[in-house]
Image (cartoon, rainbow, N blue to C red; front, side, top):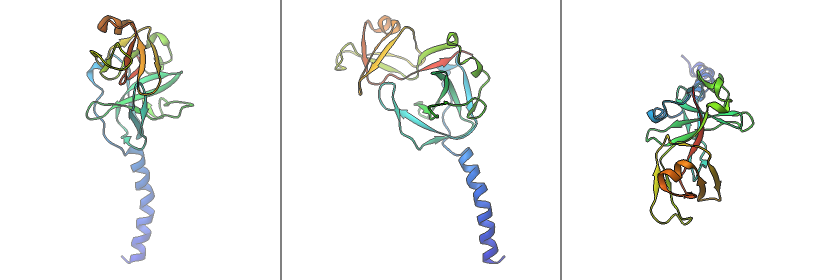
Length: 193
């Protein structure tokens, strides 16, 4: 084969290879932890960028992707879908979505229970990771932790940057704090199937 033919062949194959890698590329993530077995899960149809924890219920860091086929927890937010994958070390990762439309069922992910997502009766606010709480705004004193999977009912949350104020009957019951302070709380509105 002459060099010109080889070059033309290489150039004609490259776009299809690039298209395949952008559709299915990305890191393989870990499995959705068994702690969340009672909530709606799905499977990504395409590789998606994700964000990692960056403070109390905050996410940052674009550019890394998880692969198509990754199992995710499906979440509801402002009548849109969100999803969370779990990295190999168990860290939750928020799947990036267009703010105006969220993730689209059947396009971005497949799930057998996403049709129930917009019914508030099927939604629960759940801790995505172990979260530590303090009675003092300086985050001093004896910490109290709640594990991933803990449901929070009737909660209030406000954040002013590196620390957040949160209250919920479950925090009061476990920790004794009417108002708690935290720098690592992560929660999402998960969907019952």
